[in-house]
Amino acid sequence: MKTAVKTENLTKLYGKTKAVDCLSLEVKNGEFFGFLGPNGAGKTTTIRLLTGIIRPDKGKAMINENLPTNSIEAKLIAGVMPESQGLYEWMTAIEYLLFFAHLYGVHDPIKAAVEKLAIVGLSNEKNKRIGAFSRGMRQRISLARALINEPKILFLDEPTLGLDPKGQEDIQNLLKTLNTEGVTIFYSSHLLNEVAQLCSRIAVIHHGKLIAQGTITQLQEQTGLTNDSLKDIFLKLTGE
Amino acid sequence: MFKYILVTELQASLYTWKSTVWFLITSAIFSFTSYLFLTDKELSLLDQTEMLWLISKIIIGTALLIITVDASNTINAEFEKETAESLFLTPLTTKDFVLGKLLASLALWIAIYLISIPYIIVVSAGSHLTFAFVIYVLMLGTMIILGFQMMIFGISFLFRSSKNTLTTSLIILLALVIPATFSSTLKNNSLSHFLSVINPVDNVFSSLDNVLVDYKIAISSNLLYIIPVLIFCLAAFTFMLYSIKLFKRSGIVNKD
Image (cartoon, rainbow over the protein chains, first blue to last red):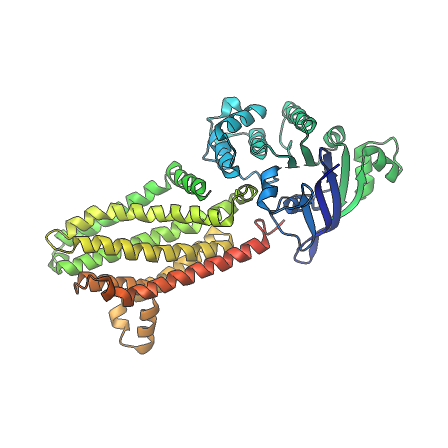
């Protein structure tokens, strides 16, 4: 199976602090990969390195076998929902998606924008200004932006944060469908139940270092917590 | 791809009423100045060419001030509102990003210039200088404003803060405009004469003086003043490229 995401000794320093420390990961095509860690563990920095927003100080990161993460080709096949939503408050939902569809060079921008709004359940709000959106609606429009270029690999940083239970369920179902259709999902979240339910494989980082990775069964074996939940495994691994 | 950045930037100016405020301020300044020139006892005694020269300085000075304030926010807003990350996740290149922003900012100057034309026509009525005035204000104004924009964009990429960029740019603007206003007095001293020769704002004003007061309309007669302005633009462009290089090296997001 082909590699969707690969890092080798990936390291990022902020001053003297190692935000990411010699991280080596491999995510296969079509995987739903969970990426866990306590606050400040380096999850967001890793996603920024994987999406070419920042450059590593050491090591390398590639997507879709061998594409450098900051290349145009990599950006065309990756969809990203970053931690900071960065929305243009004065735009309407449809204007916002059209703008990004143009930047990605989407063949039929109007069709794509209308379709993505429908997918995230914002069709009725398409002419509403983003400035008037609730937190949950902002999450949805960010997700629609991440999907506008029909990505093969989707990087999601806390995608269901601020959503009500119904909203969370809708997004989870959407992600399951996308994964079934072959989209590789790199999923960072603090909601461990959600990760346990969705992800086929999980990696845990702490202080920028990879401390464990595998399926839930493998993590249970590694920690000796054979009948415990992901939450217990996570707490044992991170010592919190 | 820069056209999408340009269009979005222009739309943002319209939606947020930012441009409308600038245009109202510009119109008020030009109307007030023209009114004074035509009605004030002492000002109306000025020679028409002197009057034209003064109004050309007011047009370019007002535009420089407005562009400085506006351009200080153009790039920095993307960092401060955290929209830069989502923009650079797309295949958008820094070149397209800067070009779109630069043209949008330049459009503001063109709008200010268009607003000034009726005032130029009124003040220059009866003289044979209207055409030269319109052309030289456009040419010199565009050059000096482009230079300032590139310098401000360079500062923006270094600081990523509109407050710091605006403060630094205003200090530079004042440091160039104030000596240019007292140019003839300062030329008595060799050091200040040298500073006057390299000051792009001073050269713009001197060229306008050459055209409007001394009737030296040919480009060749103004090359002595135009070349330092072009050198300033080149220096500002080089500085902007350097800060973009630093920006790319440190990453779109430079802290966790």
